[in-house]
Amino acid sequence: MFEVTDFLNSKDIAAHWRKIGFDKRCTPLQSAYIVWHNRTKTLAEKHAAWSEIADTMPDCAVAEGHRKLNMDIPEALAASLHEFLRAFISLQNGLVERFYKDEEKYVYRYRVLYDGDEDFSRWSMLYESAADCFAEAELDAGLVPEIRYIELEKLHIGDICRINIVTGPDKTVYSVDADGLAEPECSLLRAFEWMWFDFPTPFKKGDIVVSPFSPFGYRLYGDEPFVLTLLCSWGSEEYDENGIKGSFGVYKSADGFLEHHRKCADESDMTAHGYFQNEDGSVYYEHMHHYLDLEYCRAELKGARRILKAFSNFIKGEISEDLFATAYHVLMQEEHLKRQKLELSCFTDEGLRLAGLK
Figure 1 (spheres, rainbow, N blue to C red):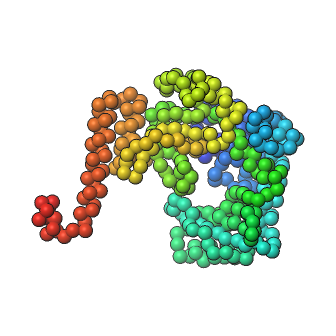
Figure 2: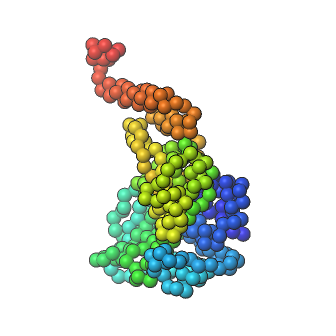
Figure 3: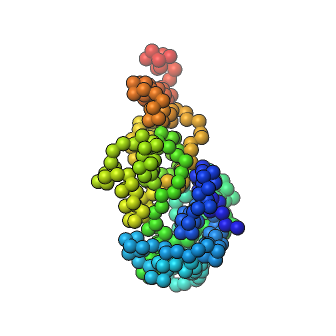
């Protein structure tokens, strides 16, 4: 039986939904989006979930107004989630079939995500078939750590037509994507990207959170913690709870901003805002996408990461402004001194003694 929390990427958000009962109140459209946004289930598991939603849950519209215009899908699909999901499953299955079909003027390439790596390897040379790519990846697996995922592309020589799939080492398909499709297919394939939802989360202003995926898409498993200050899903009630005062941007209230997002925003606007760190430990304010991926940071904060703890407790009102400023300065200087000492390793003991450093 389909359980929407099984498809959430964040264990903390899943636990929160079960605690407040939102897993039972999640609408069919919200459930379908959660399945689409999942990063770990196989394509077959997603299709089974969508089929169950279409067969057992009440039907509803997929989009209206501004969002419907952006999606540009047929009226029959925009008006019926059930028909939309069946068409979406059919399109994805068709793309997988086309990926493996032998065709002239098409070539293949692959890249691999190895266990423990933060991103895929470089793209391989070109091959005549997907089978050749898998064979070469298996040869690589004998020389390097275990393969986690294999990404393969089928490219048409001379234009932008492309089909991309991600599989496990056993060739089980996890996702499929494409460029250069006919307009109706392209609109349907991108339809979920035009959706936006304000889902409940357990997070509060000042929490140190982390995404198992990089906030900016540079790396898959960046594990970059940051201090949360604002979620795009918050309205005036959450603003009050978190001590956030004043308006946001051109909108007169948090609720007006939230209502605008419900009508017009897309997946790229599902953001979380906060304080991130540069490599030297210095802090800057930024936002990340996909707040549904967030979890509490449970790792011990060491080195420059200790600065995030100071930021967190300052934002929560646990320490004074003076103590925070002093802590930030001291921690930055400590980390700078460590880097400076590492640079001394190229000198001889005699040189360090003559310089008064040893």
